[in-house]
Image (cartoon, rainbow, N blue to C red; front, side, top):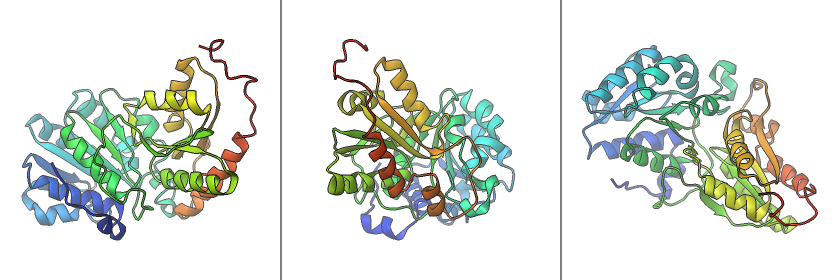
Length: 334
């Protein structure tokens, strides 16, 4: 499946709009693709699919649990249903159906969770999705993808169609900063993307924090002379453990950054790999603490939680002051 997409398109469209247009294009060649939404066609930008394929679009109303149940039945019939609703509804309101109807049966349902993290920050706590990665990555059979921008989202949608089994794609409210200006030709589920090389420290980020991490790495190189590796960990599950272990060995200082609680999300997943490796390092998780987020605009909340450029730079500089061992001999640690 190919996508006729340009960087010019992505600068004009929100991430959700890119997802919707990409799915419309992919549906031309695959009649199995259908879309369901819970009265959120406008908010999640999937209404363009209804215009293009009205007989393959289903609005179930404000009934998220029912939507996922219907999607599971469609998958049983050989279709590839895409559900489109807010991320918080995937992980909390309809969790029983996601767990039992879809994942337990390992059905080929693709779930798009929009307005993730604090990207709809001004809507309040009921619309913040700051626990969804932790919840959903713990469910068997489910792959969890967190693209950084529109182009990455298009790649995730195409990969999800090729992947047999349930997939959760977590996207923001829209108009994310541009990370990728060209199609990601070598994107693969389960593989991290190295955006910036470095040997002093590694920043592993996902979603909206990827742009912040990349900009911080460039600024730290220019101002401080620090060589900071940046990994876009688009796939949270299955996790690219090899890339994490390589960064662990080669930089020995790791920061994770995510618009999500630091408990159980990307930071927790990376911590599990580090702990299991038997190798020590200086490690810090950036994200929301064990608390519900304040209410406000997304950029202000990212600054408050130190996952914007300035916050990541501050933490990177502090990490460079950490003395974790007198020598670089790994033989006493593995």
